[in-house]
Image (cartoon, helix red, strand yellow):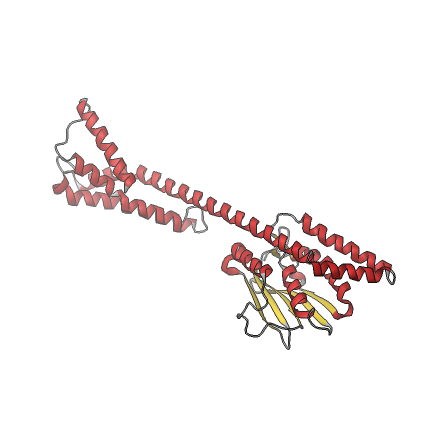
Length: 350
């Protein structure tokens, strides 16, 4: 409204100036209503252009539909404004002598096509700028979440009880099994180095995520000895599927810390992944203590690490991903992660 009111005022000022210098013949007293009405009639059409560019952009997947709709809007503008002139001629006095309807329609084409082109281009440029801003904000949000995930992963690995138990296990092996103690120290170094040298990628392949988790699991197996058994069941056709970086570590750490560590008997953590239609399903299942009684459904033992992972899933995939904690069968707990099945460049088509 403000734009077209300004346009009308500028047009009236220019017409007055041309009349004053004798370059334009005066048009009676109808200049104000004619110019204001013509400008304000563009307001609903401007809104339609903006809405159309937002809902069906010309560069989107429905490009053909967008072209048809935009041409339809142009036809509506041309015919609508011509019909409005014909219907309000006696009231506003668009012409000193009313021409034939065909001539009015041709004049409407000449007057309105260029304005429509400028409006459509401006609306789509505004949409592109808005989408670029949203993408940048989303990228910044993802970087912040990934940085937080790295810090949480490093904090989990540097917890006093974890380091104390790991170093205590090394000390107990120094005299009885020096080779094993040396391997454990090397794996501890690998774990910390991986945490500090992690790149900025939001997604990695499932194979890379498995490799990143290996040092942590080796240390925990050394700590718990025969009390901890880890099984991997990854379907070969999903090893190149993309998963959020540092997604498995909080799930496995949650299973070991809350499910198996509090009890004395042996336990098992099973990590599996398989294709489920157009989705990737990753499960981390333990046969430990299970979920606490009376906890919120679907959340159970979820702490800060799992909350951060849920936030990253929502930002990366929207409603296309989910993380659920549920009781295991016959005991323990299951963390199930569902993601859109997308493969890394060079992998097969998902």
